[in-house]
Image (tube, rainbow, N blue to C red):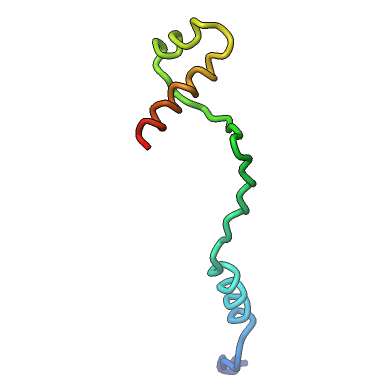
Length: 80
């Protein structure tokens, strides 16, 4: 017994699946909304600093992170 010839009619299940996949994968990805910025707020970051520089600011005891921030702020303000 021979099989009848394969005929394409309209859209097959495969065509429907490919169209659905394409419609999902071609949409642009939306960036997540940014968190609101608090004026004068600070942000925690990881920063690599030379050991000597870190020791210099830590010699003054507690508040060394504020002193680093103040030194960086002076540089930024001087360039403005």
